Image (cartoon, rainbow, N blue to C red; front, side, top):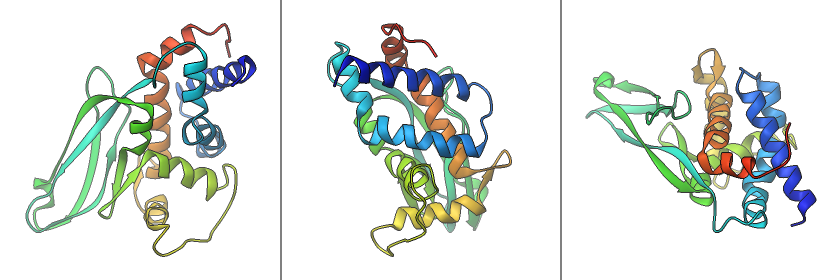
Length: 206
Protein backbone atom coordinates (compact mmCIF):
# COMPACT_ATOMS: atom_id res chain seq x y z
CA UNK A 1 0.00 0.00 0.00
CA UNK A 2 1.34 3.43 -0.97
CA UNK A 3 1.31 6.65 1.03
CA UNK A 4 -1.40 7.94 -1.30
CA UNK A 5 -3.60 4.96 -0.41
CA UNK A 6 -3.02 5.59 3.31
CA UNK A 7 -4.05 9.20 2.75
CA UNK A 8 -7.26 8.09 0.99
CA UNK A 9 -8.14 5.77 3.90
CA UNK A 10 -7.62 8.64 6.34
CA UNK A 11 -9.72 10.98 4.20
CA UNK A 12 -12.54 8.45 4.13
CA UNK A 13 -12.42 7.99 7.90
CA UNK A 14 -12.48 11.75 8.49
CA UNK A 15 -15.46 12.03 6.15
CA UNK A 16 -17.33 9.19 7.87
CA UNK A 17 -16.63 10.68 11.29
CA UNK A 18 -17.81 14.16 10.32
CA UNK A 19 -21.06 12.97 8.73
CA UNK A 20 -21.91 10.49 11.49
CA UNK A 21 -21.89 13.23 14.13
CA UNK A 22 -25.25 14.36 12.77
CA UNK A 23 -28.12 12.11 11.66
CA UNK A 24 -27.20 11.14 8.10
CA UNK A 25 -30.09 9.73 6.13
CA UNK A 26 -30.35 6.25 4.67
CA UNK A 27 -29.20 7.45 1.25
CA UNK A 28 -25.92 8.66 2.75
CA UNK A 29 -25.52 5.37 4.65
CA UNK A 30 -26.18 3.34 1.51
CA UNK A 31 -23.46 5.26 -0.32
CA UNK A 32 -21.13 5.06 2.68
CA UNK A 33 -21.46 1.26 2.66
CA UNK A 34 -19.25 1.13 -0.43
CA UNK A 35 -16.51 2.95 1.50
CA UNK A 36 -17.04 0.66 4.50
CA UNK A 37 -16.78 -2.41 2.29
CA UNK A 38 -13.44 -1.20 0.93
CA UNK A 39 -12.07 -0.21 4.35
CA UNK A 40 -13.39 -3.12 6.42
CA UNK A 41 -14.27 -6.07 4.19
CA UNK A 42 -11.38 -5.59 1.75
CA UNK A 43 -9.20 -4.62 4.77
CA UNK A 44 -7.78 -1.42 3.34
CA UNK A 45 -7.97 0.06 6.84
CA UNK A 46 -5.86 -2.77 8.27
CA UNK A 47 -3.24 -2.37 5.57
CA UNK A 48 -3.16 1.41 5.99
CA UNK A 49 -2.78 0.97 9.76
CA UNK A 50 0.31 -1.19 9.26
CA UNK A 51 1.70 1.01 6.47
CA UNK A 52 1.44 3.97 8.86
CA UNK A 53 3.81 2.19 11.26
CA UNK A 54 1.35 0.62 13.70
CA UNK A 55 1.63 -3.09 14.43
CA UNK A 56 -0.97 -5.81 14.15
CA UNK A 57 -4.56 -4.61 13.88
CA UNK A 58 -6.34 -1.58 15.32
CA UNK A 59 -8.52 -2.38 18.32
CA UNK A 60 -12.18 -1.38 18.11
CA UNK A 61 -14.21 -0.79 21.28
CA UNK A 62 -17.43 -2.63 20.51
CA UNK A 63 -20.36 -4.17 22.38
CA UNK A 64 -20.61 -7.91 22.93
CA UNK A 65 -24.26 -8.92 23.24
CA UNK A 66 -25.51 -11.75 25.45
CA UNK A 67 -29.14 -12.76 24.99
CA UNK A 68 -31.15 -14.54 27.70
CA UNK A 69 -34.60 -15.60 26.55
CA UNK A 70 -37.42 -16.32 28.98
CA UNK A 71 -38.88 -19.85 28.77
CA UNK A 72 -41.42 -19.95 25.97
CA UNK A 73 -40.34 -16.58 24.53
CA UNK A 74 -39.24 -16.17 20.92
CA UNK A 75 -36.53 -13.76 19.80
CA UNK A 76 -37.59 -11.40 17.02
CA UNK A 77 -34.84 -8.79 17.05
CA UNK A 78 -31.86 -7.80 19.16
CA UNK A 79 -29.21 -5.19 18.51
CA UNK A 80 -27.62 -1.91 19.51
CA UNK A 81 -29.57 1.20 20.30
CA UNK A 82 -26.54 3.43 19.92
CA UNK A 83 -22.76 3.25 19.79
CA UNK A 84 -20.90 2.56 23.09
CA UNK A 85 -20.61 5.61 25.31
CA UNK A 86 -18.94 5.93 28.70
CA UNK A 87 -18.50 2.19 29.03
CA UNK A 88 -22.13 1.39 28.23
CA UNK A 89 -23.74 -0.13 25.15
CA UNK A 90 -27.43 0.76 24.86
CA UNK A 91 -29.40 -2.15 23.42
CA UNK A 92 -32.87 -3.07 22.18
CA UNK A 93 -34.59 -6.46 22.26
CA UNK A 94 -37.93 -7.44 20.75
CA UNK A 95 -39.45 -10.78 21.77
CA UNK A 96 -42.78 -12.55 21.48
CA UNK A 97 -44.45 -15.55 23.02
CA UNK A 98 -44.73 -16.32 26.71
CA UNK A 99 -43.61 -13.51 29.06
CA UNK A 100 -41.38 -11.83 26.48
CA UNK A 101 -40.67 -8.98 28.89
CA UNK A 102 -38.59 -11.34 31.03
CA UNK A 103 -36.07 -11.81 28.23
CA UNK A 104 -32.84 -9.85 28.56
CA UNK A 105 -30.11 -8.47 26.33
CA UNK A 106 -26.97 -7.41 28.16
CA UNK A 107 -23.83 -5.96 26.63
CA UNK A 108 -20.24 -5.51 27.67
CA UNK A 109 -17.65 -3.39 25.90
CA UNK A 110 -14.69 -5.29 24.49
CA UNK A 111 -11.56 -4.16 22.64
CA UNK A 112 -11.62 -6.30 19.51
CA UNK A 113 -9.02 -6.56 16.75
CA UNK A 114 -10.50 -5.18 13.54
CA UNK A 115 -10.96 -8.64 11.98
CA UNK A 116 -12.76 -9.93 15.10
CA UNK A 117 -14.89 -6.79 15.16
CA UNK A 118 -16.06 -7.53 11.64
CA UNK A 119 -16.75 -11.21 12.41
CA UNK A 120 -18.70 -10.31 15.53
CA UNK A 121 -22.49 -10.18 15.60
CA UNK A 122 -24.04 -6.72 15.69
CA UNK A 123 -27.68 -7.84 15.56
CA UNK A 124 -29.87 -10.93 15.74
CA UNK A 125 -32.92 -11.23 13.49
CA UNK A 126 -35.41 -14.04 14.09
CA UNK A 127 -32.72 -16.14 15.74
CA UNK A 128 -30.03 -15.54 13.10
CA UNK A 129 -26.89 -13.72 14.25
CA UNK A 130 -25.77 -11.09 11.73
CA UNK A 131 -22.09 -10.21 11.61
CA UNK A 132 -20.88 -6.69 10.91
CA UNK A 133 -19.19 -8.07 7.81
CA UNK A 134 -22.51 -9.42 6.50
CA UNK A 135 -24.26 -6.13 7.34
CA UNK A 136 -21.76 -4.04 5.35
CA UNK A 137 -21.80 -6.47 2.42
CA UNK A 138 -25.60 -6.57 2.40
CA UNK A 139 -26.02 -2.81 2.08
CA UNK A 140 -23.09 -2.44 -0.33
CA UNK A 141 -23.76 -5.45 -2.55
CA UNK A 142 -27.52 -5.93 -2.34
CA UNK A 143 -29.10 -2.53 -1.61
CA UNK A 144 -27.17 -0.40 -4.09
CA UNK A 145 -24.22 0.94 -2.14
CA UNK A 146 -21.95 -0.50 -4.82
CA UNK A 147 -24.33 -2.94 -6.54
CA UNK A 148 -28.06 -3.62 -6.51
CA UNK A 149 -28.94 -7.30 -6.48
CA UNK A 150 -32.30 -8.85 -5.60
CA UNK A 151 -31.08 -12.44 -6.02
CA UNK A 152 -30.95 -14.48 -2.80
CA UNK A 153 -29.78 -18.07 -2.46
CA UNK A 154 -31.95 -19.91 0.10
CA UNK A 155 -28.97 -21.34 2.01
CA UNK A 156 -25.88 -19.28 1.16
CA UNK A 157 -27.73 -16.00 1.69
CA UNK A 158 -29.51 -16.90 4.95
CA UNK A 159 -28.21 -13.76 6.66
CA UNK A 160 -29.32 -11.58 3.74
CA UNK A 161 -32.83 -13.08 3.82
CA UNK A 162 -33.15 -12.16 7.50
CA UNK A 163 -31.80 -8.69 6.78
CA UNK A 164 -34.48 -8.34 4.08
CA UNK A 165 -37.04 -8.95 6.83
CA UNK A 166 -35.37 -6.54 9.25
CA UNK A 167 -35.18 -3.85 6.57
CA UNK A 168 -38.95 -3.37 6.48
CA UNK A 169 -40.21 -4.83 9.76
CA UNK A 170 -37.96 -3.71 12.62
CA UNK A 171 -37.64 0.03 13.09
CA UNK A 172 -35.52 2.00 15.59
CA UNK A 173 -36.20 5.71 16.04
CA UNK A 174 -38.21 5.79 12.78
CA UNK A 175 -35.32 4.21 10.86
CA UNK A 176 -34.91 0.69 9.54
CA UNK A 177 -32.87 -1.38 11.98
CA UNK A 178 -30.51 -2.27 9.11
CA UNK A 179 -29.49 1.34 8.53
CA UNK A 180 -29.57 2.12 12.25
CA UNK A 181 -27.07 -0.69 12.89
CA UNK A 182 -24.91 0.53 10.01
CA UNK A 183 -24.81 4.02 11.53
CA UNK A 184 -23.93 2.49 14.90
CA UNK A 185 -21.09 0.58 13.22
CA UNK A 186 -19.71 3.80 11.69
CA UNK A 187 -19.88 5.67 15.00
CA UNK A 188 -18.32 2.77 16.92
CA UNK A 189 -15.48 2.52 14.41
CA UNK A 190 -14.50 6.18 14.21
CA UNK A 191 -14.79 6.75 17.98
CA UNK A 192 -12.38 3.94 18.88
CA UNK A 193 -9.10 5.21 20.37
CA UNK A 194 -6.90 3.35 17.87
CA UNK A 195 -8.74 4.89 14.92
CA UNK A 196 -8.39 8.29 16.54
CA UNK A 197 -4.70 7.56 17.00
CA UNK A 198 -4.37 6.63 13.33
CA UNK A 199 -6.13 9.84 12.31
CA UNK A 200 -4.08 11.88 14.74
CA UNK A 201 -0.90 10.62 13.07
CA UNK A 202 -2.22 11.66 9.68
CA UNK A 203 -1.69 15.07 8.17
CA UNK A 204 -4.98 14.70 6.30
CA UNK A 205 -8.06 16.56 7.35
CA UNK A 206 -11.56 16.38 5.90
